[in-house]
Image (cartoon, rainbow, N blue to C red; front, side, top):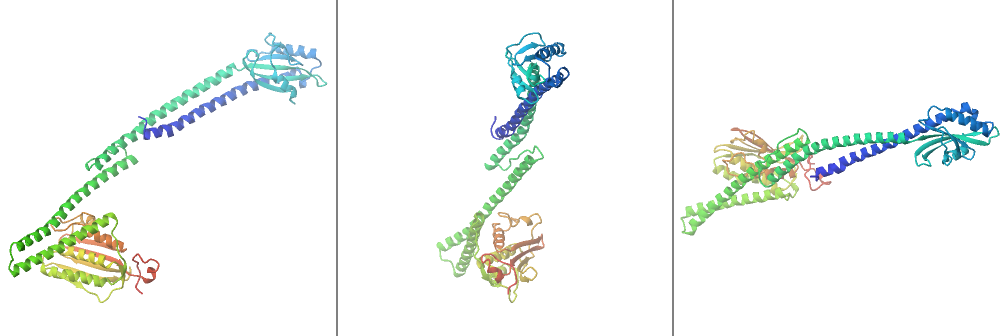
Length: 484
């Protein structure tokens, strides 16, 4: 029962509260004890001041006069039920008491202390000869020459004081126990209010870890526990969506791999079982080369995606001419655009500033973006590629625009996510744009999309211009700035 959070609460919180209450009870007991004892002592000292009327300035003419006057005083006191008055001779022996009983063997340490005190008054708290707890105050009486004649001693039992101390201590202990009980009960329900949802979240997290992404946590409280419940539910929702995307991705990739393999295998078998005519042979070889290139491109894309997932995707940055890579990418896809009846237009500027990048990776990005534009543009459509320098931002922008089917607004924010594919009717793995976006980020640039359904899509790639002065400080990162 007491483990985990309950155990920590019991040890840390409840233990501290218990220790504080015990200390408070002890402190209160000590304070009450001190107060009661000092009250009794002060009362006796106050009574001793009455002797000033019997023995002015604490002086008596002779021993006989002192004994007689002190005895009469002791016999006439009106608080015999509260204190006993004893008359002591010069040796400290009790010779008379207000009770009428002799106490010759009574110990009188306070008298010995009073003889040494300048005020002639001293008190004692301890036990009497009979073993009873008492407090006593002695006041020394002297003759005119300063010799001690004896003392008047006031003695009070501490039985009532001890009883008061005990009562107050018991009351404090009972109050402390009530506080502990209230803390224990409230703490129990508080800990339970934490443990119950935490256990439910633990069970739900275990189900999610086992692949049940439909598991949900019931939100019990609108606090941090509730926020954690929302986070777990949101996590399960995202994992479920990612699982579906992953399964769709595997299905698409399997289809993408199977299609070229089927074509290659079919034409290879056709050639294996007989030598076809030249036209058929050329057609078959063309299909095999085309599908092999498609298969190679897909495998390379998967390898890049694997590197991206594991953090091993790297770029080799160097000074380069971006126009050369764009020209080559457009040239490589120009023939395909003609064969598909589409218009690939490229506004080739005369020159552009030098950038700091990886030639092969950037060409891969350009090929991917233009390839996507060709895929989603119908026959007779147009794809335009434009490159220009943004003097304000010190960047080069590559814009690829098409008048294809476009992307729905709800899909647009997700098209750069891994596994996501907005249009399921078009062939593709759905990971090319995620890889391209990561490559551009590694060049300190951006890849942005604007699209409207049935209008077209515009992809804008922004890359910083190489700055030779800044590059001297950091030769591994692309830097902004004008080319000197």
